[in-house]
Amino acid sequence: MSANWIRALVTKGIADDAMMVCGLVKVEDEGRPITAFQAMETAVLQSCGAGSLQNGFPLLNTGASLAFRKSAWLKADGYRQQQHIASGDDTFLMLSFNNFFPGKVVPLVAPDAVVSTRPMPTLLNVIQQRLRWNGKVKHYPVGSIHFVGLLVMAAALAFVCAIFLFIMDRSTVATFGLVFLLRFIAEWILLRNWGKLTNQFFSLYEIVLMSFFYPLFTLFSLIIRPFVNNSWKGRKL
Image (cartoon, rainbow, N blue to C red; front, top):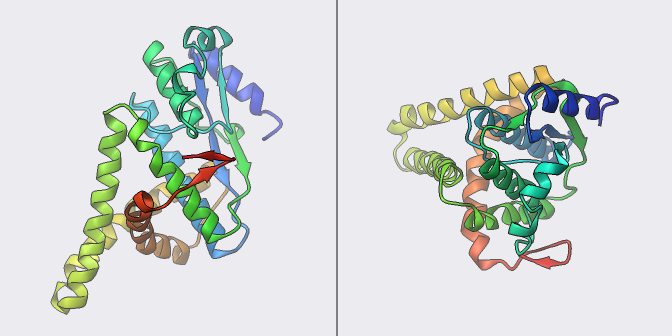
């Protein structure tokens, strides 16, 4: 955390008369492909999460940078409503607060609100983490989170289909190029703005690789999820 982390969260909460203030987290890029991948994915997710919350559609939350009022915690009954779920307490708490206090859960997009964390060390750890994230979807209330999840899955599927079409028929190169370009431009804009906020920048080469491989990784993690028994911190998911 920065030296002004607590001050930034509390000041935002008072200024907006908020019940919960959601900060940001960035994954440190340690100069390896697997850590750069995690850093870029987290940057995109955090940007989308803050933007959606600002527009009244909470999608995700991070307990690494979070503040809320004790009175609101007591009224929302703390974690009791989601205590049967092994993972995702931060996001489920945000959704609970949003139900009790509509419009009083706010994002804080500021350098002092960004907490830095270490990446997962290996690809296997990353896969296990993604499987844990995917496993929480069934517990979310039907709404914007499921819609966005389906949109992400559809975009990944469209990209994979474009790859297969190009392999089977090289004349479809324009279709593949358009699908890839749409992904790349969106991710490049998000990551550029993220860099301005956090001073965490990525090379054009890294963003191109991210745009190409991330849809494949997304579909892979979704496909294998039903066939893998996963656990987290000693708890079965």
